[in-house]
Amino acid sequence: MPAANRRTLGIVGLILVLVTGLLYLQVRHHQFLQYDDDKFLVDNLAIQQGLDAEAIRWAFTNNHASLWLPVTWISHTIDFSLFGDNAGAHHLVNLLQHLLNTVLLLLVLTRMTGRFWPSVLVAALFALHPLHVESVAWVTERKDTLSTLFLLLTMAAYERWVRRGARSSLGLALLFCALGLMAKPMLVTLPVLLLILDLWPLDRLTAGWRRLLVEKIPFALLAAGTGVVTLLVGRAGGIVAGLDTLGIWPRLANALVSTATYPLQMFWPVGLRAQYVFRSDLPLWMVVAAAAGLGAVTWLAVRWRRERPWFAAGWAWYLVSLAPVSGVLQQGSHAMADRYTYVSLLGLFVMVAWGGAEMVGRWPRTRIAALVLALLVLVAMGGLTARQAATWHDTVTLFEHARTLDPDDPMVLAYLGAGLAADGRHAEAVLRLEESLAILPDRPLTHLGLARSLAATGDHAGAARHYRIGLAAYPEVAAVHFEMGTQLMLAGQPAAAVAGFRRTLELEPGHTGALTNLGLTLLDLERFPEAEAVLRRLVTLAPGDPLAHYNLACGLSLAGDTAGSALALESAVARGFHDWAHIRTDPDLANLRATPEYAPLVERLGRAGAR
Image: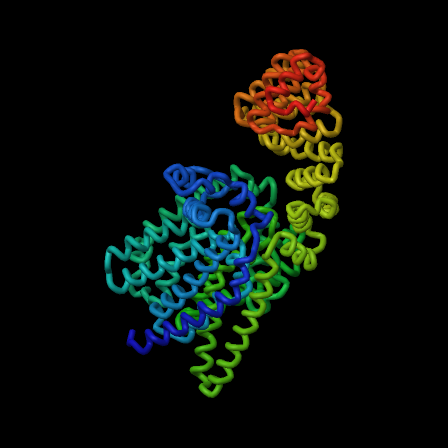
């Protein structure tokens, strides 16, 4: 490439980076969300301990959240090593990767096609389109930006291998392909995408289909292995619905409608939201219209495959890259998602850019009008992107926005309730969660969220009722048993609470909260020997905790072992328990205070005035 062209490319790339960066810079103030960020990141201790051999082993061997994403987990682990729980810094890493992807796309497309300005338009649309906000402004979607980075690097290495024949470039292409698949398995279609590149812009069909297919075997083996692992992990975790859960017709209907909807959103990106409700009863006319539209464009692509190969390649790229998330393999409860367009819209952007270039080439007098139109579209896209990015600031803002668009979506109401609860607005959270359950009563996580908010408002009996429903779905989760036991204890049902705490300890023997509450509940039931055994075990597990020693002192006092109680109280004070007003009035220490040894004990502790 001549120096002048490289300079122009550098200037345009810098402008794209600066404009896109300014539009998205607001994410430095965004928070982690109660929408996958919690279970993926905030509550995931495995990625918060720093990058070491154990963290890498975990990344490759776990099935956390029913997904196999080792490269993405390592990326998040590095973030926590560098930034801790600074959410803004994690968001900026997503933004940095999006900017790198924009520059790489511009470079790769320009190099592959030899066409500069159409490549600029594709890169600009990719950088600024509001459909891509979800992938950039949501930390959990690091897998989008990261996998696309490796996809573009694969394309660059593949192009170099095709045109120069360097085996090292082929090795790099396979390495980047593997890394991309381990960042997000949506790239299982990459071998087919490379065949599409052979059609256009690399124009390799003269090499013969057999050779082109044989070349893709190593890529196909990587993709097949990743696909099998992903499907098995997803089915085991319940995020991929079986045919017994959701029939084939609702899946196909949703796949057709969603695939036809994304191009419409590309041209008219309004009403974008975090959650699109899945409908199993889509009107037949809508499904037929979607199928007819998709069929018509496919017919044009086949008809124009020789005179307009960019049209056929762009449309094929869109359909193929979208196929894994089209909805035939239904994942979760949503019908579609903006994040699914991060890679797939590249094909449609190519169709728009090269179609515009053909129009200008045929009618040169439209050049100025086309340039003005392109700039106006990009300005409008940038404004919509900035506004859409603002809705991702926090959970409540995100789902209040979604609620204005679809007020009866039970998942939107559930996530909004979770966000309100995280902000301490439990009374409002209860209202939203109850609305969600009125529409979708069988979602256990909503029952658990409602239970926690009811507990925070003091309705412990109501909380226990919803915990029981949650436990039916999660019988092996220690935290749920503990939370329900706590609510039963506070609701005045100590015998039932004991069962909850004992089950917690069966699942997690070192759960100190369960030991504490079990010991105190047994004291209330006057089962003193059992309580003493539990409280002594707690002291053994947490020898430095002054409250553990104090609770043991209370238990021994109630049981009549005043000498043991005195020793435990002395240990509690030595470890920092200095609430003398509580010691003077705590009824559980009444037996100890009635002994002659009490006054000397207080003297020895240096607080004679506590009597």
